[in-house]
Length: 423
Image (cartoon, rainbow, N blue to C red; front, side, top):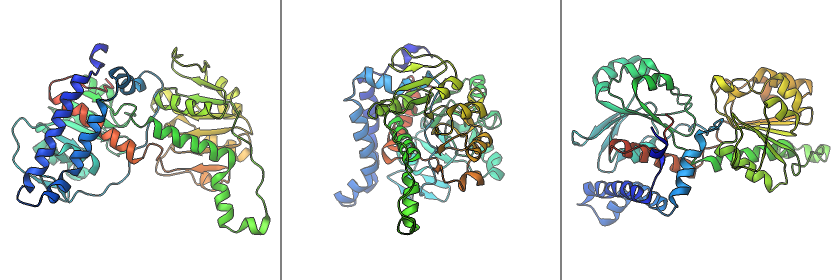
């Protein structure tokens, strides 16, 4: 796909918006014999999507192009996977869910069929008015399911941490799949080499939740430096009344911040650091010419020059254990490590040893090397802040990501170029 195909002008957005708007009529049609109020209620999920799409029209094309493409050219940061969501009892005008089966009203032969590897109600509400949506059954029944439905599937939906890999084995059961839509920025749930061999397009949600992850990262920075959650536990345990004041902490303002991975999330973190008068340096696959921050040629050097190190890098072989024993030692006994990227970026065994041995001051983690099994040692340490991989999980971030995935699918099946291609 050429670089020129990545652009997104207002007329194209208007076209996509008009297609979305049709969903309102589809949603209200089955309720034409009911009161107007009931029809409007049924259409609310689609109306919300239309409003969001319309808002996109107000964004200058150059800004939107920058937003949806900027996260792919560096050591990529990753948003959170999203957890379990409630099942949809019924969908507006398109059928009813019965467990993982859906009785859908007749659709035209041209309607593309999408296979969801894991259910997510917010995505289903958006896709159902325009696509036939299937759920992948449990592993024991997936082969039989794919034998029947597989040849009709043209699109896949997945998300990092969903537990099902889009690999050669799965793709071999879906001979006509054209596109894999991944919610979020990360694509470690997709075998890109296998997809490329098949000519399958892989898209993500771009940088739509960079703000959410950056907010959470800065919350972890503040907690790690000022022991906010530890103070909460101190009060709740009655220790304030019995033992008096907690130990002093270090201020965050003015401390040197090192960022591993200066993509959209890394830059959002750096922007917030400016408000705290924190000098920022970074390490990437390559230097950036569009930022005022100092580029450092190695992670080890980055750690030596930082008081606080934030990992906002994607997973994969290229970033595996980039933060190792030497890097943690260079960060030092007063240093703090924050990870909102991928757990595999940090050597967790070395991290535990550094915390136990006092060669690292503390850590705040949103991701782990072996999710969902967090190291018992980390659970017992007072200088550790733990979060259940939720940095990107906000209502606003999820809504924006779902809309971006839907825009990509609409564009592809309308014969247009996708907006946020990974490859």
